[in-house]
Amino acid sequence: MKAFIQKRSENLRNDVFSGLTVALALVPEAVAFAFVAGVPPLVGLYAAFIVGLITSAFGGRPGMISGATGALAVVMVSLVAEGNSMGNPGENMGLYYLFLTVILMGFIQVMVGVLKLGKFVRLIPHPVMMGFVNGLAIVIFLSQLGMFTEVVDGEKVWMTGTNLVLMIGLVALTMGIMFFLPKLNKKMPEALIAILVVSGLAVVLKLDASTVGSFIRDGGGDGLKGGFPLPKWETFEKVPLSWETLKFIGPYAIVLAAIGLIESLMTLNLIDELTETRGNSNRECVAQGGANIVTGIFGGMGGCAMIGQSIINIKGGGRTRVSGIVAAVTLLIFILFAAPLIEQVPIGALVGVMFMVVIGTFAWSSFRILPKIPLSDAIVLITVSALTVVFDLAVAVVSGIIISALVFAWENAKKIRARKTILEDGTKVYEIWGPLFFGSVQAFNSKFDVKKDPDKVIIDFMESRVSDHSALEALFTLVEKYEAAGKSVKIRHLSEECKRLMVKASPKLEAVIETSVEDPRYHVMAKAMA
Image (cartoon, rainbow, N blue to C red):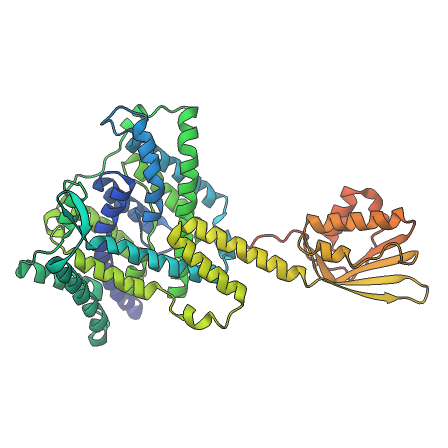
C-alpha cells in the first residue's frame, strides 16, 4: 500500500509539472489557430480550455491533450467567411455560424462513439501510422516557422538582422536546456524549466524579443486577458434554425467531425504505443463530441487531440487525467489572472519546445526500414506523409487506407488456385485454394472450362474461403453455366452461412450443395473486431 501511494505521489508531481508546461505551450497555438480561422484569440483559448478539460476528465485516453487545432482551423476559414457574408457588415455572423457548426459537429462525434464506430481505427495499417506521424511532425515544424516573422509598417515580414539572431538564440538555448537537462537529472521537467529559464533571462536582460503578448497584438488581438467563458445564447437568436442553415453548416460539421475524430484516434493510437497501454476509442469519441457541444455553446471554436502537446505531456511524465486537467485549468488561470506574466514569455522559448517535439515525433526509423519493407508499404508511408503536409490529415489517412486496401486485395486476388483431378468414374474435381472475394472472382472464373468438362463436376472449397457477395454471385453464375450446358455440378465444404445465403438467393441451389461434417465454420462477411 505504501509503495502504491508513493508511486501515485511521484506520478502526481510529473502530471502537475507536465500540465503546467502544456498550458504554456497551448497559449500561442490556440491564438495562432484562432487567427487562421478568422476569429478572436479568446475563441481559440476558450476552446483549448473547455475541450481540454472535458476530454481529459472523461475521454478514453489519459494523458492525451486536446484543444483548438490547425487541422480544424483551415476548414473553418471558409465557413466563417461565408457566414460573415450572410449578415450585415460588422455583425460577425460567421462567428455564430461557427458556434452552431461546432455544436452539430459534437453531436455527430457523440453518435460515432455511441454506435461504437471508433474501433475501426484499429484497421489503420502501420505504414499509414508512420506516414501520419512523419507528416504531422513536418506540419508542426512548418507551423512554427510562422513565428519567425514580425510586423513592419502593418505587414508581416520575415525577421532579419538582430531580431532573427535573437530569436534563433532563444530557440537554441531552449532546445539545449531540454537536451542536456535530462542527462543531469531525469526527474526534472525539462520543458517547463527551459521556458522559465529563457523567460527569466529575457526579462532580466530586457531583451527586445518577440513575446506571446506581441504575437497576439501583431495578429490583431487585444491581449490574452479575458473573463470566464459564458454561454452564448445569442447564437440561437441570431442564426435562423432552419433547413437552409442546416444545409449550409451540415457539410462543414461532417468534415470537421471526421477530421477531429481521425486526428484524435490516430493520436490515441500513437500514445498507446508510447506508453504501452490501451485507450478506449469509443469513449474518446463520445467525450470529444460532448466537449465540442459545450465549447460551441460557450463560444469556443471546437477542437480535437493535439499531437504536439500530447507528446510534450507524455515526454514530461504525464500519464493520468490529472495532467490534462491541470493544463486546462492553468490555461484558464492565465486568461483570468496571469495574462500580463504569460504575455512576457518569449515566443522563442515555446518554438524551441515545439522543435524538440518535432524531433521526438518524427519516426526516424522509417529511413532505415524503407529499403527493407515491401514497395507498396513504402509508397503508402511516403504518400501519407506528403498528403498530410499538402492537404490535411483526413485526406492523407483515408488515401493511405484505400491504397493499402487495394494492395491487399490485389495480392490476395493472385492467390486463388484450382487443383484439378479426375476420379475413377470420370468426375472432375476442382479443389479451390485461396480466398474467393471480389478481387479474385475473375481469376476464379478462368479456372473452369465448362464446355470441355465432363458431365459431372465437383467444386471443393475445403482450402478456400468464400468471403463476400461477389464470391456468392460468381458461384451462382458458374452453377448456371454448368446447368445450361446440361452438366451436373456439386459444391462441397461451404460454410453454413454461405449455404444459407445461396439457398435463400436461389432455392434450387440446395440440390447442388453437398453437406459434410468437415465443412468450415467461417463467416461470409467477416465481422469487425469487437
